[in-house]
Image (cartoon, rainbow, N blue to C red; front, side, top):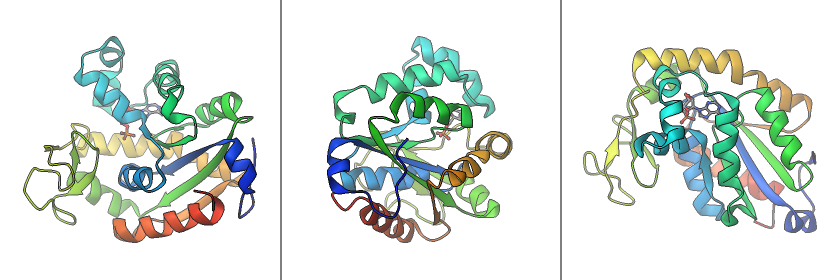
Length: 234
Ligand code: AMP
């Protein structure tokens, strides 16, 4: 895999796709920030969780296979994750790069991603850091747009019109796994299986921590500045 220092040579970026990975606990703002940086840098936002929810909604075969895992807050088996992810990243709109939200979630997934892509992409890996207390508060009041995936919060960032997305006008919904019991399990799974990824990428000199405890706009400003500093061509 290509490691970078502060800045990547622009000719490299032109030749290779840029894969931005956002790590962080559930509720750290990965979805919120992904939607915004996707628009800012014109790169598709790929959320494995969104892909699964879409399949569940459309009652596809894969949707039926993964539903019980999402309902419980458990991780979906790797083969199903890879099937859905690789089908998505092989589409034409991903040729210049994309933003991964919710993947990888284990070091095994990270290895597999590197095996597949390391010779053809640059990885830019950010860790959104927030306190546990903030995470629980954020998840409990979270509202998500059915169409554009923008995230609102009942108390801290409510939509202008109740139940309606400010940006695209579609209906907002509360994720069925954003309930206290499943939140608890998702956090447990995060600490056990996903948090070790921080150490993994840190040891490879690839992890850029981002203080994600501020407002979404503040976090976005920091994140965008970091991406532009590392990839001035974007
Ligand atoms: P998210 O929208 O990222 O919070 O993901 C919602 C749910 O989808 C998780 O609780 C898991 O059940 C499943 N999921 C999403 N991404 C992955 C992944 N990379 N590996 C395994 N399960 C996943």
